[in-house]
Figure 1 (tube, rainbow, N blue to C red):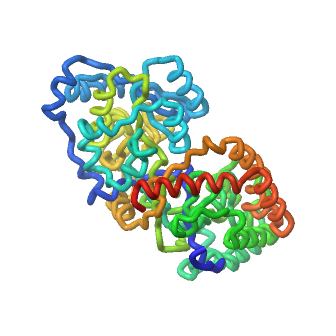
Figure 2: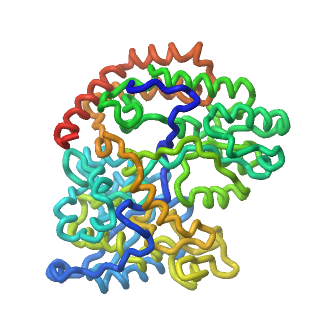
Figure 3: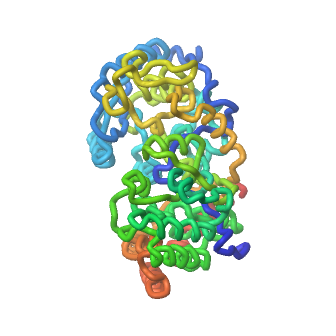
Length: 508
C-alpha cells in the first residue's frame, strides 16, 4: 500500500449501481448547447432505402400508455434526417436480461439497445454486440465531439468499442452524508464541523438520545460501504487497486487494514444503536428509510443535481456534509450504462446514424425523455419544463428514467432541477482524477468457477460485516479464510495478469 490511511481520513467514494446517474462529458462547456446534427452528404447512399430501427429500452414500472404516440413523433424526425423510422420495445426491468437473451438467440428484430454496465463485458464475450469502431469513424462524429476521448475509449474491450457510454457524470461523486434538515436545525448540528466519519459519532449520539424511534444512519440495499471506498474495485472487488493507482498492483481488499478499520467503525455504530437493526436483511434502500421517518441520514456520492433529486424523492428538506474533496473516474463509472448495436441488426450503419442523433439532437432528446410538448410537458422557461396543469409524475402519459437516455444533457431540465447541473457536471468530469486503470475491464471467464464460489462467500459474510451487524473480531478471520479456500488468490493473480497486459498495450 502506498501510504497508510487513518480511519478518520480514509478517502470516501461512491460505487456505482445505479449509479449512477445525472451527468455529462468533460468535453463540453455547457451540456445544453449541443447542436442539432444533420446527416452528412457522405451518408446519402447509405440512407437511400427506408429502414425501421427496433430499440430495446428498460421499463421501470408500467409501460407508458402514450409510447406509440411518442414513437410516431420520433419517427417524423428520424425519417427526415436518416430515412428511418423507430419502433420502441419497452421491456420490464424484471425480465430485462432474459427477454434480451431470448430476442438475440431467436434472431428477432433488434437493432439498438440500452446496456447496463454490469452486463456489458458478458454481452461482448457472448458475441451479442457489434464492434462499432469503424461505424463511429464514419457516422459518429457528433458522438466523438460530445464525449471526452478518455471516457469514450474507456469502454473498449480488448481494443474494440462495443458501446457508447451514456452522457452523465463519469465520476465517483463527492462522498458524504445526507441528513434531514428539520432534525439538524432542531438539535443545532453544526454541518461545517463534519469533515470525517469520526465526526459523525457525536451527531449520531445526539439523534439516538433524542429520537429513539429514528435510526441515525439508514442502511439496507444501499450500504455505507457503497460510498466508503478508497480503491478502484476493478469490476467486482475481488482484487482492487488501492487509491486508484498503487503502481497497478492488485491487492486483496478484505485483507487490508483499511477494510478492517471500516468494519470496526460501523460495528461500533451498530452496537450503539446508530444503524437500523435490520440493515443486513431489509429490502429497503436507505433513502426509503429516511422517507418513512425511520432514518436520519444516509451516505451518498453526491453529483450535480443529486441533492435536488433526493429532496424530491424523499419529500423532505435535506442537507449534505461532504467527507472528502477528491473525485475519481473509473471504468465502473463510465460503463454504468451504454448504447449498443445488436448482432441481429441488418443495418448497423443506419443504427449508428440514429445513435449519433441521440447524442446530438435536442428535439429527439426531449421526445425520448419527456414525450410530446403540450401533452406530457409544458415550457416553464427557456430551458426548463413542468407538467401540464392537472398532471404530475404519476399521471403523465409518458416518461422514462432520463439516465438511460443517450445524452440527457441536451434536453430540457425540470424546473425543480438544478439549472446549471450540466455545466457543473462537465466541470466535475474534467477535474476528476482518473484511475490509473481507467479503461481496464476484467474478463472473469478464466476463473469463473472461483468467482462463483467467492460470490457465495461474500454473500454469506460481506453485508453482515459491512452493515455493522456482525462483529469483525469474530467473523472477519472466518471471512478471510473462506475467501482463501474459495480461490481469491487465483482470481487476483488472473486479474493482475490481465491488468499487466492491458497496461503494456496501452502504455500505462
